[in-house]
Length: 408
Image (cartoon, rainbow, N blue to C red; front, top):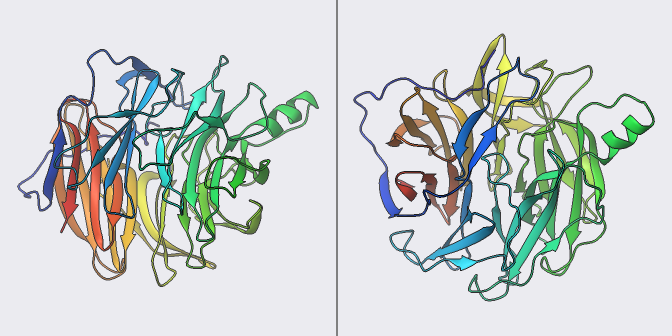
């Protein structure tokens, strides 16, 4: 039942309606190591080698575009003053080399502190399989240099602390949440059952220079799907993740955090009732519009069909749930600027990967499809990003490097 695998229909006559803003040649080294990707508990799926390409990009408050990418045991930060038409020489984020997770669901990330500090977070793998630490480095000069990285959490067990999501709240605090298995390990030691993993969070009150002791947000998260985050209209952080609801339904949960990292609200967000004994490695994306609408995309199986969905999350369920793309769409991302909503995703036919997008100008009531690009090599998951009222897609590929597409 390989319903989460990415594949797609052949490119038709539709023209690319977006503008390709930039190409960063040579952003992927031929010497980069290969990485094994597997879907635990999914009927013995064969492992497939892939080139490390996991990257992130975001616009700073001054309009500059920043991109972070893994190169071996270092993270490299690129800066652009012209929406990616040209890039500065890369800056090393971590001066001392260390292991860095670089798959699509567990990528390095960028956030910005209220005082202008640039924050880069990542997961550092440890010795045992599927273990890690959440790391963070801060720059005080716009990304020209970085202080030595810190480990965000106090717990130092050689267990899972992975798949972090970072955001700056409206109150200036920095919030990080991640998947954590300390409670699973405790349950095993006590010979008690425990579904999945847990979500933990830590809060910084000094712009990411240090963090308070972590707190538990929720028990029973899925183990290997990325967490996503957004800031609500009141400035409070929201985190959305795949959850393991009783008895074993892997839908999504949404939590709104208080200033200490504990949830002030926790709710089931999707209701597809997918029962599966393993993690599909396919996390959601969330964005909040100025009117408070919570737009989301996610992957689930519903009525026997595995698809990407879009919907607006409400206190009473999902409004306007619909399919995104074709049967082979996967790894969608989403961004919102005013009433404009952009969704981007990939589709793969075994030879070529095509990059797609949909854009709504009416708050998600209707969407227009766009065909953005295609590549014959390996590629990262696409990232939907925004600058003011403008929406873009950032995509890193093995052959073409880092590209930015403006959605007009």
